[in-house]
Length: 458
Ligand code: ARG
Image 1 (cartoon, helix red, strand yellow):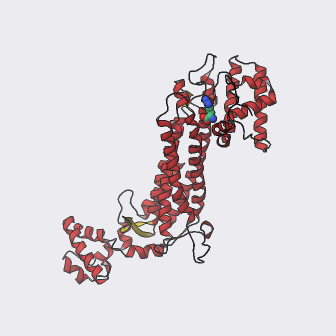
Image 2 (cartoon, helix red, strand yellow):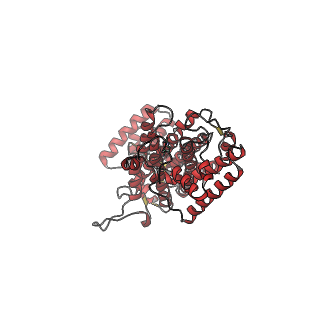
Image 3 (cartoon, helix red, strand yellow):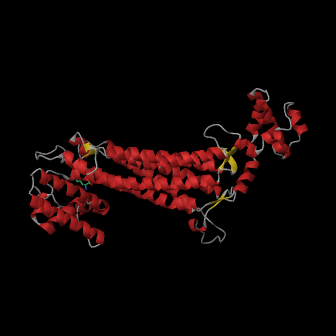
């Protein structure tokens, strides 16, 4: 396919330049959006009397036939076309003749591509939002089941205070809810301004109806500045940033899953269908899915960096550098989609092992704060109670005991304030269920969180 732009040149372009310049191998995925934009643009040209009704009919017939062939699988996308815009226009012209040559009236590939990416990312964002909702639902379901499973909560990866498995899982549900909000915000802003009609950069002398095209294509309004219209890739950066943040959350969750299914923890068992083996070690059951998510997170950060660096030094308006936006943003979309479609069923099929969680919670003195709180509630200033409990913990470590294994006499050696009720106060379930502050780890709080989060999804 020749280029659309053999204007002033006296020679054909070197084939190496053509290969270098071409974007069809990664922008062909915008073909539906490109056609959608052309359908609306040509309808507007007809309404405004810029092209004839007959031309509009021919263009629409041709574009629909291309769409039909795309859907039936009959359309062969020419890998030698410069880009998807060239391919569609030339295919159209081959099918309907001169009307096809009128399609590009009052339009440039600069505003066309700015439109196509937006439309493409709008669909991608909606799909990802649906996937995130599914993942949140699975987390809520697992949290509901594990609402009463006491496990150690960690800081510095050291056993810290008792929490419930449900509470820990719901922490991720809240993160993902924010991710959803960020994607919705980014998409809303992306849908606010339609670039179509900006032309190459300076608008056009044709009497375009930009409000009509903006409205038809699902935008709130046409963009207010044609130079900004063709130069803006903020929406790619914003969306990519939201996706990178979501990957960060998935990566942290993955890291915990990896720890939890190790023999050192064994808080969960992953379904065999979501693990892999080793070619030499017959006993192995590896959490490859989560490791890949952790690894792929770096890749999406890289995509965001590509976009930010690509945009930072280019003068207004369109520069060819901007063609690099697509590989980066599409890679981020594909990576996040792939991770979400795999992690969700993996979490849905995972089996929690509450007895192991409880066993881990019994070691590591995670009820020490509760012991100090017990003394504080009996009248000892908290800082003294903290010191006293610290001394007790040090002694227990020396003697290989837990706090609850001390006799009342032994307790009393540290403070007269200790009574028989200390055993209930430092019992793991009491410690966890006693943390009744709003947003805490109790079973009731987990159930409330599940209800709140599900309410926000609806
Ligand atoms: N393939 C190009 C891109 O993705 C389309 C815009 C081309 N515009 C131009 N002035 N060369 O950016």
